[in-house]
Length: 265
Image (cartoon, rainbow, N blue to C red; front, side):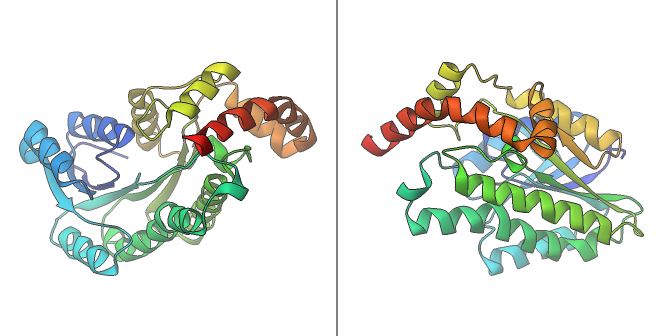
């Protein structure tokens, strides 16, 4: 996919990963509509990027706001790329999460993404070449203790991307599922950062993820998992899940230790 002169709708642009993606898109010559809830962050983005960026305050959970975004993109000639990067995480043992936390994560990470993609699809079909991007996670292929609800949303998002890609196989709209591994962003709590350090988990920078996105789009890839040995673990989990289960069982006491700290804070 040619990114120069592309017209993009990017959600989650006010987060660390989203901002890195935005920087890469603008550098490639794209025009980007950025959607987010933080007005101050959106204003800073507009000041930094100028005319290349059009900020829109929107809550993707709101049908009214999704309709407003649809009208915004309808008026943007050449709209050909939707990047669903908005998402939340919540590290905690499943039994300790509130019903509200679980419902909110599903709403933001999955339901809103699906509904926005549905709203934008007729517009994307007008372009000679278009793509819908779902930003997933390694935890969309490996169930990991302490992230049960988050894993559920990302597993579902990966399945949605796969099914939609096959549904659109006879069109010019592609679907990319990009799965970063652990990434250094403000989404991580201190407990997650400390747990990753204790377990020796490698963490990528947001810029690494953005570079992976750009490469995947340019090569018209469909499903990309970033990082090694994570790609190997994903393959093993598909072929020999009991092997990964035994490995994670050895980590469980450490995971519980840091998850308990979340409860105590």
